[in-house]
Length: 184
Image 1 (tube, rainbow, N blue to C red):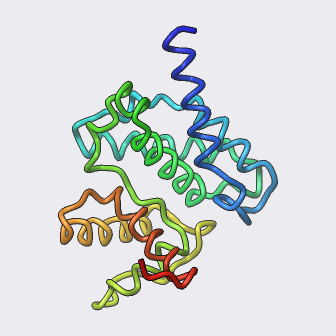
Image 2: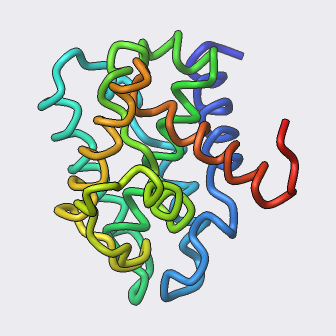
């Protein structure tokens, strides 16, 4: 097996592990998960190995629109495409093989937090000035609303001397402890 075949297999594995039925539930049509997994399995990860925020954002926007257009009619939601893409990119970045092979750590500071109701809910505790808009739901999330949330997340990350991408797992861990009643 050559390196390209192994890359493809591992990328497909990460895509499948990243996008579950619950990740994209209630998006308006059947088949969204399979389409997202297929698209992400073939994504050019090297195109995200950039050192410039504008280049990263441009690539992220292009891929969001491309994935959105691949979704079945009735499910072509920008928010669902962006969420799937961000979860996959974060997981690819966290995957030692893919991150190293595609130099994904070049863009560490640019990755977004995948937005959903759990993240939005956790952010309410940080939003003392009430600057965040009401959470519209993944299905209705648009680029402008996402930008407001991502900017806010960037401010929180800076307070903790972290890159924004890591906030998702921190917020999820906090939520998991809340849901189970564990305080460890």
